[in-house]
Image 1 (cartoon, one colour):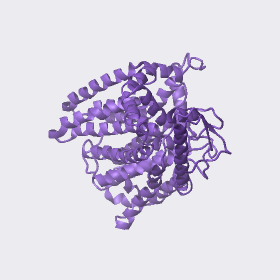
Image 2 (spheres, one colour):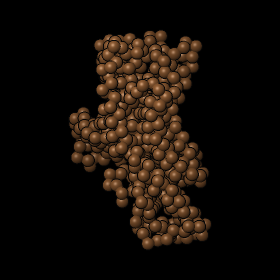
Image 3 (cartoon, rainbow, N blue to C red):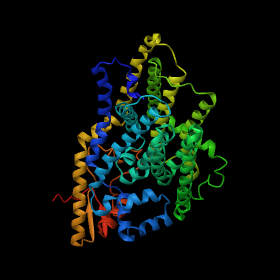
Length: 499
């Protein structure tokens, strides 16, 4: 699926290099910013919880008091580098997750091209296609910090989504791949499926239309494999849903005092639709979705013109595809309107956006393949579309997070890294000296948006990562418990120990 050929430029080396260079320059600042990443809030909390309750005790404690996400809970605690004093480990995790997300998207695209669509799709083509989608996402993500750089955000949202993407890819190979490897792929698919279903409730509900579409489309001979996935998935989901902590968290997130709590079922659909309309009304999001759809449409059209079209879908098959597409992109809003009686949290909107871009590109590709078939003599009619499509991508990448990421990389990333390292060193020294109170200065940065979101620069960020002025505040308290300092305060006049 050559989404990167959406520019439809001549096949000279230079013309092929330009869109690839654009993708690299778009993604590069987000990847480079991981080298300056720092742990945040829940990264520290999960670390000292494990220190207090023990490796397995913390799993049971969280299962009973807060969450049934037993797969991601294990990773947030036992595999949390902060739990072992390696604060710089979050840099490695963020960079590795960024690359793994890119590879997971490419794995799905390549598997889709090689199996169900019966076309040729090299790893190179799949990687550039996935890179384009990832670039659109990074540029328009509602809360990039909580998806790309916050360790617990990566574990809670990126990893389950990777699980769903890789499960789908392996399921496609189990259904349409070589007979000799079908059952092996079916068995391997169980692992990412469990991660997707038990790692995050949003990914769990997103998996429902994916499984339904697979159940509709898989060859009859592959039905036993589907039953295997459904059985294992149902058992894992039941275990997660039975967690007492889940019900405690639901009660905390949707308190009965909310005016819509008593009759939220009656207004669930309309309010979920309203949330989706508000989400899609954001210019950067709707234009990014249109760009993804246009890229897919262009690719499908080009392949159809070049004789690489797949067989036509029936009306029943089109109904299944459109039903799965609509459900996949609506079900997250439905979930949050029920759980929190409000719109999806900004950190969850990140995942919703990435799924929207991927599914819209896929739907656009199908439309280009199926509904815009023509002979190669009509190639010339496509040329006038090149310039508007190029301008759309240039405009998007100029107005979104890409220039912000480059600006932060050039002006604030290194000072942020230095100041946070000095802050941690001061806290460690205060612990060793038994100091009862330590007062630290706030972060002094010229800009903070993507890696270091600060309210002094933005009013719409989800998290302010800095300490709270004074001696109270959630982040102050987390620093106290992790570094074992009785009282951590923040004052603009305080000096930072630079030793």
